[in-house]
Image (cartoon, rainbow over all chains, first blue to last red; front, side):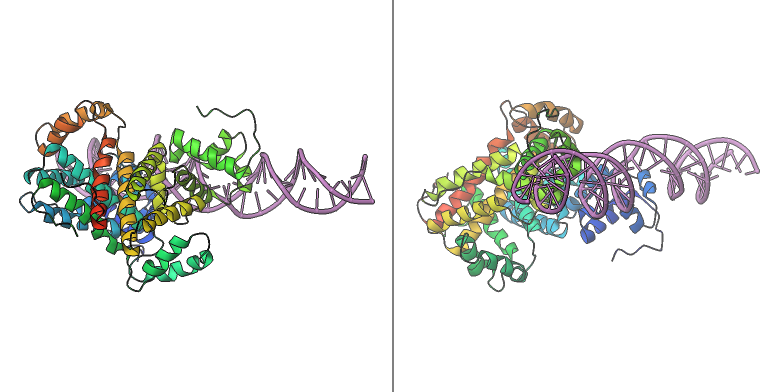
Length: 225
Length: 225
DNA sequence: CTACTTTTCGTACGCTGTACTAAAGACGCG
DNA sequence: CGCGTCTTTAGTACAGCGTACGAAAAGTAG
C-alpha cells in the first residue's frame, strides 16, 4: 500500500485527484498533503500545481469524485425504490471515503458530478409528482439524515460487526453502573451483543423518513407497525 | 471584535476553552491557532500548554462546551416534546458554532457534558417506554438528522432569511435553463422566493421522524396529512 | 539547428504545533 | 530577611505545511 510508484505514469488532473482519493482512503485526510501526494505519485510537490490551482481545488475535486461514485437515481423509476437505493449508495460511498463527510462542511463550490447528482435527485422527485415545496423538504430531510449518519459512523472508534465489543468493554467497565446507568444498559444489552453493527441502524431512520413521505404522497407507503 | 485583551485575567483551562470558542465563532475554526488564541488572551503561545496538553485537547474541550450549551431533555416530560425541543436546542447550538459539526467527525473522546447529554437522552426515551432497541434506533435517527442538517447548513454559502437570493441569482443565471432545469426550477420557485430560509426546512424532517416514532409507540402521534 | 510551448522542479517564505529549557512569581519556613 | 520549592509564564528552535517565484528540462514545429 502506498509504495512509491516506480513507473511514472504521465501526470494529469485526473490522476492527481485519483491518487489523492487513494491516499486519503489509506492514511486519512490529514495525511493528504501536497508533499505526500507528490511522493506517492513519484513526483515533486510543485509539479502538481500545474494541474491544480491549489490544495482547496484538490479537496473540491475529491469530494466531487465521491459523488461521481454514487449511481444516479432514475426519474422513470419508482421514487421510493430510487430514493432507498440511492441513499444506500450514498452511504456506501461515504463509508468508503470517511473523510468526505467532514469535507462537505467546508466545500461550498460543487463540482460537475455533484451538480448532476442534485439534478437527478430533483428530477426523480418532481417526476414522481412531488410539489416543488415537498421536493425541497424531502431532499433536505433525506440528505440531512444520510450525511448525519455517515458523520456519526465516521466518528465511531470502531467499525463493522462485533468489533464494538473489544473497544467498548474497557470503557464501559470504567463507568461500571455508577454515573451513566442508561449508557451502560444500552452498551451491555445492545451494542455489545454479538453481531452488532451500527450500520444496521441506517435502514430504520431511512424508512421512517420514506414512510412519512409516502404518507404525504398518499400512494400507499408502508403502513404503521 | 477580538482585540487584544488589555486586562490580563488569570489563565485557566476554562478560560482557554472559552476564548477558543469565541475565537472560532468570530474567525472560523481555521483561525483558531495556538498563536492566535494566545494573542487574543494576552499571553504567549507556550503559556497555554500549562492548562492543556495539546491542541487536540482544546478541540475536544470546545466540542464538549457546545454540548454543555444544550439543555438536557427531562426524563419526566412528554418524550415527544422533549425530543422536539432538544433537537431545536441542539441545532441552535450547532448554528451558533458552525465549526462544531465538522469537529464531531474527528473527535472520538467525548467530554463530561457530552456524556451527561447522552445519558439524559437515553433516560428520557427509556423512561417513556422505548425498548432498548428502539431507543438505539431512535437516538441514532434523530442525531443523524440533526447533525446532517447542521452540516448542510454550515456548508451553505449564505445564511438566514432572504440572503440566498443575492448569492444564488448570479450562479443560477450561468445555468440559465440549460443543463440543470430542475435545479433552476427549485431555485426560482422556492429558494429565491422572498422570506426563504433553509433553516425552516428543519421542522419538516424532524416531524417526519417524530411522527414515525410516535406511530411505533402507538401513543397517538400526529396522523398522516 | 532554432524558437517556442508545455511540463517539471529547486529554493525560499511565512505559517503551523509543540519539545525543551529557562526564567519569573508565589509561598511557606527558618 | 534568605532560601528552597512549586506554580506559572516565555524564548528559542525544529519539523512540517501550502505555495510564490523563477529556472530548468522536455517536447514540438518550422
